[in-house]
Length: 133
Image (tube, rainbow, N blue to C red; front, top):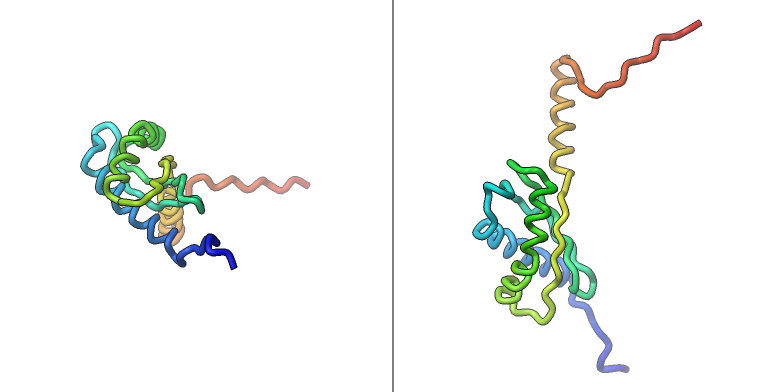
């Protein structure tokens, strides 16, 4: 039996992703200018199996998602160095930020459902073609 066989600790990836999300949220709240980037909320972190890369998903209010993503990706190196100081782990992942459109999509769907329940006009609904004999 090999002594160097790697055993993954169950749930470590999820715990580390949660800790990264928590620490990043605090750093972003303190260090990113709300006037430029808007109010940023982190919706999730996906880690690669070797912990070398992290996809950080976020939503934003008060700014364009592309602008917020550019600002966050510009600060990714600095955020990485701050995480290194906070986490005390050997490998701190390289950060890449992605806008998460699911929240906005959910709000749109909720609005459409509310309109349908009230009997009001529903937007983006195609007109039914007239039957031609």
